[in-house]
Length: 264
Image (cartoon, rainbow, N blue to C red; front, side, top):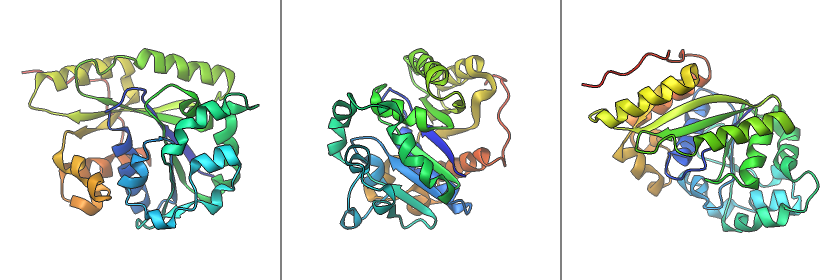
């Protein structure tokens, strides 16, 4: 049965979609069967994975709103063992259309449960909001990855996200746990990055991933070519770190303890 991991942060620009694309790729390269669900109306995960638009018969919108069988809309990627359920701008209206549905919070869960046995991991790229789509991702998930960029106001808004996670645990999904907090866009030349790392580890303790994703031009460029970083520049530091993250999630790396980073 697949482990379902939602990737969420209501702030934009945290590396959420970059993480969805590259983590799913490196899990697949470990031989894991992975389904990536693009739940963001921007559809950046769909395009960033190089999905052939000619093969798209429908999107997650059709699954949630029109009750189309999700298995008929799954698209193979050029990464072996990695498939995607695509998204497009039609998803913008999904929250309004779902608002009056019974079990509106469990629509995605109802989609995922029948296909869990087909995969080892199901990753959900949630939109940068705390709306109904993100709520669906968290209700469907076994755990959540929270990307946090190493910048000013990095932890701003995380309190509300944690309250939302706890509320969902209480009312809808008692098994939901924090898979890990992922520090992204780190520039180790600056004191600011060290301060954010220290602050995050002090607050979240062992829930912070050992792997830290650096600020990387190659990581930024890769989606424009429709490629995960492995296929764009597998020797880059960004590729190395997403490989480490995938291994950490599958149990080949230990979590960092709560020791602090020194600031020179």
